Amino acid sequence: MKYDLEERTSKLGINIILFCKKVRQGVITSPLINQLVRSGTSVGANYAEADDAQTSKDFNYKICICKKESRETMHFLKMIAIAAPEMNNEAMILWQEAKELNLIFNAIHNKLRSKGENIK
Image 1 (spheres, helix red, strand yellow):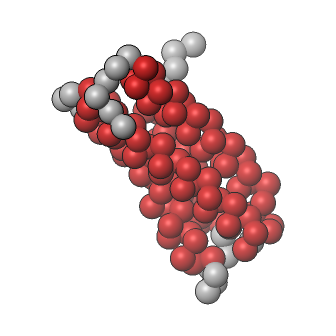
Image 2: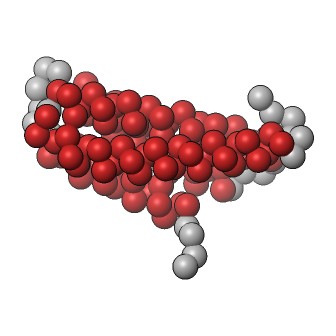
């Protein structure tokens, strides 16, 4: 089976949008939804940019953004699960996918670092 990280990150963004459309809007949930949509859709956008990077330094920079955005997505999924407990099960499924992607981006970053790339 071919592993397509671009497709997987895109699917996360789509699933985040569909999830957020189900969350009841309110004073607490609306800002959380906005943040979650931003971070959840940003993972795929930044991975697509990383895939088209011109240099290894640029690639790594974009991968670091993917790491941060997937981590932020995990955070806001937890917050929505607290603010809208009826969404907890679905939020945790998405949280698991964001966590797995975060681990993948960490592994990519660490591999580049171990290869001696001039990175942080």
